[in-house]
Structure formats: structure tokens, C-alpha cells
Length: 314
Image (cartoon, rainbow, N blue to C red; front, side, top):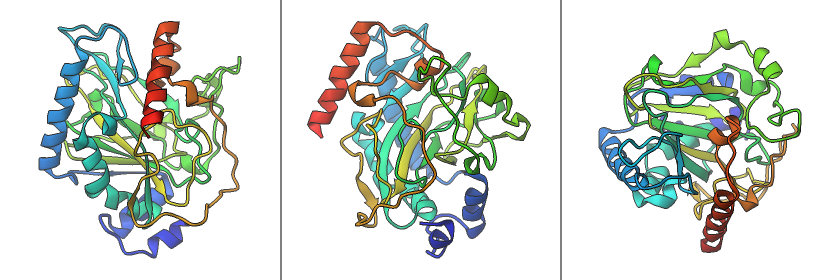
């Protein structure tokens, strides 16, 4: 659907001005829209997940660990596919206000794609370099968007999400390096061409949401504060958007219609999309890729087995 067609449907959670801002700029921040009851529930289960990670010494298909993670001092980069790890995450992704937010921006028929929880740990949580999401998981059109929920108050020093306004209307960049290895971020030359002075860093209190389009150039700085920045992310698309590569973060809920009805026709955008590596055998991590970390063979084989198990359970 075009923005004009989407705007013809009455809003469910956003104002007309907020919807137009998203279509014009490629992102949106809405403060305190998630009720405190939900924030409390999500924080509780997230704390339980952190406790489960303490005994790990290496990243796996569920927990992406920062270097320096220990049983006494856990340091997480990501909880992969939280909707698979606890029913509260799926309840939130499928039945809370975020579904109405998605419908206001992709149309009345909304499809779920995947989820993740990026922690941005205190005192050094890693940066995320400039990148665009859609080339990790191409769809037939560019309706997919990511809705992030701040579980804690987030200020400038905590590495908030930074958005380059209007960049969703620009080119898609090559996220391979000069040796044709996938690094998942813009190359140095392309990054220098980004006008970083326009970056809008999306700060806000707990319960605020960030929304960004799949083509938007975005990233975040290190978190050098003494407070963490857990950001729960759920990805949705219009029902008429279909994937044509393997999901790097597979889930039994992938493709679930969370609002409206399934599409009978696929919508194809005529703008081309970069194709990522074949994720069907497993996926390391956005952080590991951008930092060009080396994973040993045992880790990759274990991850592939865990990914295959998820697909069999689907």
C-alpha cells in the first residue's frame, strides 16, 4: 500500500501528524505510549533471561554475549528471538499497542517477521554502525518496520538509536566489504558520505517507542554510562510483503498475521534490494559481523543445529 492508501484508514494509536512524519522522515519516536504494566512485565522476564545467561561462556542461538561476560558480571549484547524464549514477549508482540502502531504505518493487515532484544550494556555496550535493515531480510516491498520499546529511561549517554532523517528515500548501500564478505554495515566511503550532523538520537523515558523503516540508515553509539539500555525490537510488515531469503532469526511465529487478514496478492516494489548471505544454515550476530569477530567451528555448527531445530518445530 502507498502512504496515501494507508492514511485513508482511520488511525488506531497515532495522530495524522505522527503518521505523516514517519512517511516523510522514515522514523518516529512516541514517548510513554506503552503502559507501565507492560514495562514491568517485560522487565521481569528480561531479568530472568539475564539470569539464565550467567553460566554461559560462549554466545549461542539465544544469547549473544559481549566479550568479558562472566557468571558474576553478565554482559549481553542480544537476546535472540525473545518471542521464542518466553510467552510474555509473544503476548506483547501480538496483542499490545505495538500492533496498532504497526497498522497505522503499514496498513490494516499486519504480518509479524521476527524479534530481538538489544541490551547495550552499561559501561561500554558496543556501538552499532550505520546500516540498513532490509538487506538482512529482503521482502517483496519496503513496508517492513521495526518497533523498539525502551524498557528503561534512555538519555544521550546511553547509546540511543540514531536515525538519519529521510535516508529511507535514498539508495540502499552495499553491506559487503571489498572482499565480498558480509559485514552488515556501510563501508567507510559510504559512511563518510552520510551527513551525520542531521542524526536524530531518539531518547525518551521507559515506555517510549522508536519506529524506523527498513530502508532507514541508522545506528547507535557505545553506552558509556552506568545504566543499561535494553531495547525490545519487533519487526512487522504489511501482509502483502513476502520474504524471498531465509530469516536470519527464525521463529515459529514468522508470517503470523497479528492484525487483519492474510494477503491474496503480493505487492512488489520495483526498486531492487541487495541479497544477503544464505542464512538458512545459521547466523552469528549483527554485532559479531560488524566487529568482524571470528566464531569457532563448534559455535557455528551448534548454532546451525539450533537453527535447524527451530525450523523443524515450525
